[in-house]
Length: 214
Image (tube, rainbow, N blue to C red; front, side, top):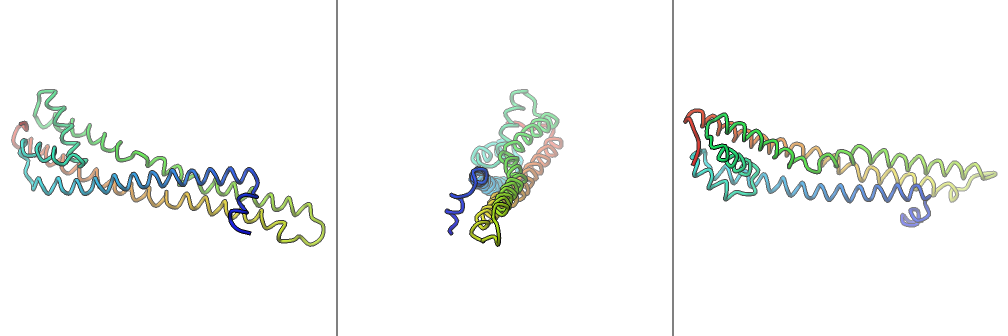
């Protein structure tokens, strides 16, 4: 008896559970691939942005470099904050600090996109698989109850097999989601740390010079 036969002959409840777990796994991997690309590109672009700056905090030069590094979260934060202070017609340190804080929050929201879904899949998939396991074992025991004499393995085997498959599918969906979630949380923390450090350096420089504008 192969895997497909076991799934095909499983009870309707376990077939639905297995279909749900398969769908959750597909969604999880889609989020993992999208977030992996986002953080990989963001890290490389931030490194390029900071290397190009080389510690310079001249307003015109920072603007030019930020525009050329459009995929860098730190550069996007800077350009958005720059537009805000220009709209307010203020270039003092307090205005820049407020604008940078606002844009850091937007970076946080952007970086955390999809992570709650991974957390939900990681926490619920094992329990959904456990439900399928309990259901499969229950089916096997119900079949045992209807047998007189020595129970045959071919009678209870399918129920046990579909129970184990449900457990495996639950773990298959949950484990990558758990690993990816923790990895992306760390990547998001590093992304925000880079942007925070850049923003603090910029605000300190503005306080020292008294203003920052093109």
